[in-house]
Amino acid sequence: MKSLPLRKQIEEIVNLTDEEFAFVLEHFQQRIFKKHQIVIHEGDYAKYEFFVLKGLMKVSRLYSNGKEHILKFGIENWWVTDFEAFHRKTKSTLMVSCLEDTDTLAIDLENKEKLSRELPKMQSFFLTKTTDRYIALQKRILCFLSSNANDRYHNLLTIYPGLIQRVPKAMIASYLGVTRETLSRLTKADT
Image (cartoon, rainbow, N blue to C red; front, side):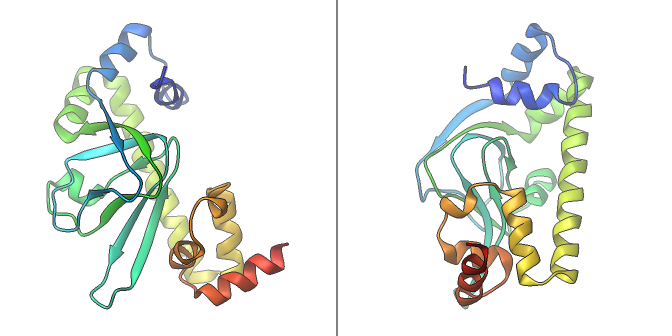
């Protein structure tokens, strides 16, 4: 069943009965996207938060000079959206797109809040996931401030196992904040 990864992730934090999990699933809808499809455009409202079942997404910002900054990749079992726009119901400042054909479970804010109210275990789950995201963001910022390119590269390999084989080197370089030439030196030194 496609929803098993979601149940596994939830049950790492809270236990659910079969009936409770069925209730949880009622609040999600399956959304399937094609490779290169933009899920959230800058300036659009972020209507959904996506749990990635299969595939690969990226969260980025494109600047007027054509330069793209990749904030995050969304691999299997990760949650992806423009979190500020989603929770504050504002227009997105980020773009969410698919790097592979991607299968997700999507939840809108109204259903997320309803689920949290009606099943307090889920409120605990969502709070834990939000805290985990905040901690990961803090670590990423500190890594950028205090680490060299080699350390950032090895950190990426730890956080996103197998990603280096799934995305173009230019995107890896963008995520790391380095040039493609620097990334080439890092990957050569690693072999």
